[in-house]
Image (cartoon, rainbow, N blue to C red):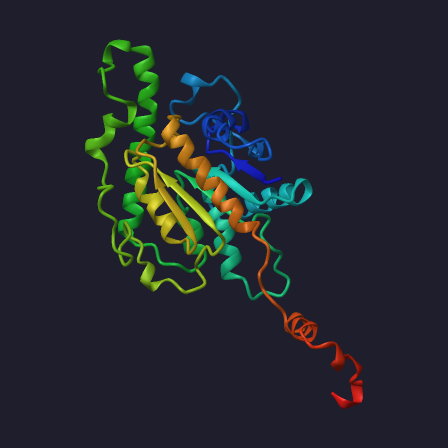
Length: 307
């Protein structure tokens, strides 16, 4: 029975994330258990959220400082160890930031003798990114260009998502055939058909990062070509050694079309299968036993002293 802990985005909630993921979860059989939890801090709703959902909203950290992020790591790890075990974390936006930094800090400290194991064996990142204060706290260089791109795309995301409220109150502004995320398309910085080189992934030079600054567990990275934060999703994917990637073609959301839902469900199945494969490692003792089992019966009388 696969168990997956689900971490929502900033300014939303467990119930909202449950709704956002309903389409692809419906494509999985009933053996998959998804646990949704609210983040520990109340917050204002993310732009556009109140237009659709009327519920209390939360955030994993009020300020994205290393200290606040570390608190969120401990809070989620304590919850997972008390209520788990979990095969994977499924995350959206800020939830991805939490899970990704937890995995990166763990990798950077892997040689510490008292290091506890991660409370998940795989991660499903949807519209994610990695917060720069955490990277800098790890000693990784974040260029001024990366910071500028991060500020611009964050502001553009808020502006575009907030337009949903404006459109809902002024229906005459809606243009037939033009979805929410098309309104910002001309201002997006990225070209989804062109993957940047590793030495300049929107300002991050991955060729200069240490070898242990990697997410080595199996992951899924899902992002949308129309998302202003597409650059952040690509940066997160670049940190992952063992990953499957999928561009759902939408914005900072989870499209509910049958095609997209089937694809995401299939990737969830694959990553869960990866972490639940039985070990194929054969020990030296097993090799010896296999060899002995193939000996003819007459050799069974050989004494220990004669071996």
